[in-house]
Amino acid sequence: MTVKAYGPYADKSKGGRKKMTIVDNKTGKHTSTNAARYKKEKALGRKLPKNVDVDHADNNKHHDGAKNLKVMSHSDNVAKGNKHRTKKK
Image (cartoon, rainbow, N blue to C red; front, side):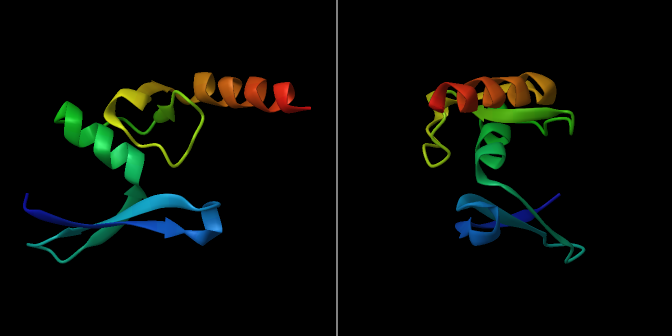
């Protein structure tokens, strides 16, 4: 499949998280994805299943460096976020 990626660009509706638009050149279909997820999939050379998330290890959603992105289950990522939010109070 030949695709063209556009972005990243800030998605104001999602709190400024970076998004990518992916266009299949053969069919013309397009989709959008999280820029961090796109970067990690490119680094791994494969698509990630829908039940996993790409986590920012330092909790900075704007830091998409390769060493900062890690794959984890959705439930573990939600638990990490909840733990991080309770520490702020």
